[in-house]
Length: 248
Image (cartoon, rainbow, N blue to C red; front, side):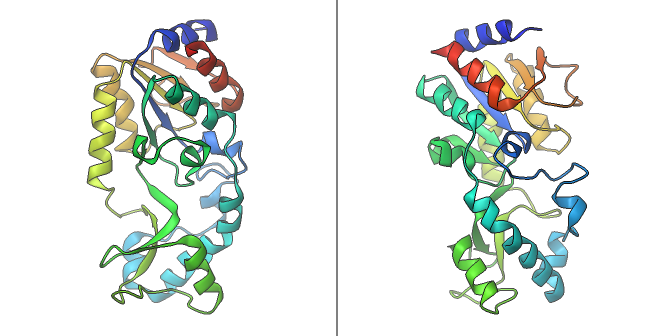
């Protein structure tokens, strides 16, 4: 399968859905989670139920969050993110589904309503009781000032980074919107994802079964390579701009 053929699909497509995993953001300096040097290799995973019931686990969770936050905040979109913005500008990209929590698709210029963040966002903290939100800047400033596990100032509930932890339910409305987009596209472009985390990894199959072509761009093999119409290997910051130029 050649890049030329993939470019022709982009050119002919009218309803593209993008799907991104950590691989699109590693080129922006954000570490992934699953690699030998990733986030989970160097930090203890705090499960959602542990966060809720154990103050020591909440403190550890917030310690990890605030340690990583400055680099996350400073990260800039790369050519891969900008390519999806270009496809949206062309009127081709109808939705961007992401497993990432870094907000780089929006930072690159995609409207917030186009981006479906399956695993939440690290840009904010949310109260688990009343849903009130504050910025991560404010939350980490409070941690650094001595509130090691900050609580909501509106209701006294537990504040937690607005990301989905292991054991925490995925937002049903976001998943429904992502499934609707996948079932109505004509080209599903999955990039930088291991495609092993469900229910997110089911979305490429939803698109394929609904009649869309499935294009996977990733450095390493994925479990869905065998059902994809095409698989491309390489640097996303180089491949995706090439695809986006095909639609212009």
